[in-house]
Length: 557
Image (tube, rainbow, N blue to C red; front, side, top):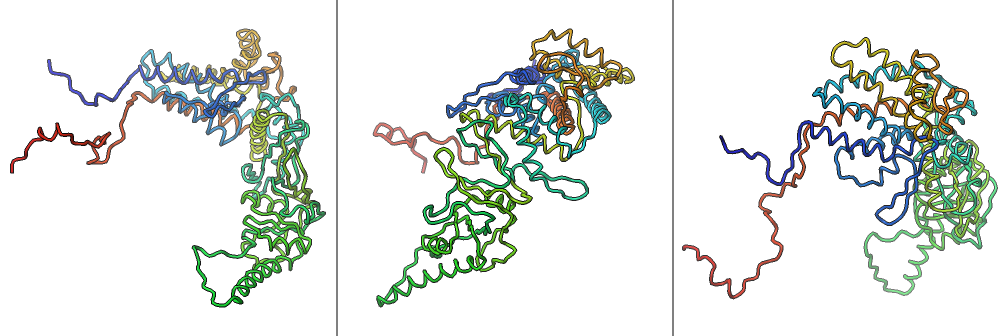
């Protein structure tokens, strides 16, 4: 016998073969089980303690997984899934993980029978293509401008969330804000930029019912000189600047030697004149409100207030962009270059109000604003954060409808239809791929099954009844009413899902399942490569003591 050959260093751990597959599948299922109970209207909330000791109470799949710190690499890639889902379409973060977990779960049986992972993956991808074509068939187009339908869709999206109990409130906020900022790019394409142009301002206090979408922008600022400047202006002319209204300071320390005392006065006068000049250039356009992103000196403030102009300074750039979008102004970088067209006249009202103990400036009642602020009121910080997360989801759904106005049945009906269609199709598939394909069809049932579990009805009976209804590809719209667990027609109960979300969920889940199945080797414990010559760093500098001095090797001369 030969001595065993060591290829990997001792510090590395290598797992390979079926062991890895099992470990990965277990890990992914564990992640799916964590958030399985947060699917559907009867969902539970999870409470997470983050590193800072703060609490997050939520049932948004992505928000939960974001806070978790996982050790297992496969579980980490599951978390990435819900993140992509959140960034792409904003909803369906929980379903995507449940589905992927189920896909892996059904694959486990095949791996035990020594199926090759690529065969399973091929079958899965085939199933994915067929699933997408099935949902293309049952999708029903809607009219974006039909408010009731859109409302129903957004409502069923938030029905599963904590704020579902507040009825139409959040749905209305979401639809209002997204239709406000939607921009037609032509060719029937709508671009809705939620991140840039919808600002969610959370103000603790008041009731949730006080939340509203402002036809304009609200900023957490007061005017510079509260006593002198007007705090309420009707139809203000707004000028937005991106430059400081103060004397330019030298770049680095500047020394000026003054020989005569008069020179000092001349210097001061020059500064004053410079600022006056700046202000005059701005005041030439008779603004009522000057907003700058940079500083505004006392002197400039004096000139402006003398002219009866309110001023706000040091505004965030993003807020400035929003105001520009809302009232039609152009942000100007140098006062010299101001033109009449840069003045924003779109706003109907500027006023400063006090909420709690802070002042907020409102630029509201805009004509055709392209940016808006959603004002959220609520009892506590945690509540507001949760409402904000739900609103984020709702707005994404509203955005998806504007982009792609197609509906699918919710309540697990879509998944059941897909599952039934795939089961029928699997009989026509030849060769070894037939079984994994069928398994993928069964895996789609995870969503309605989880819904039924969360309602607390008899899962097996409900599922068989549903499968019976769907078996012959008729009534594709029959699903579970997530509140009662009864089997109902989704069209009547108005439980809908947007097409984008569903398609993205299926794609993400199956692709991820394939990726995780294909891993057959995990090598862990890889060290960072050290720079050559660095060697192990000495922990303490060695100090020669008298004892050491003698036993140093004497180098041969």
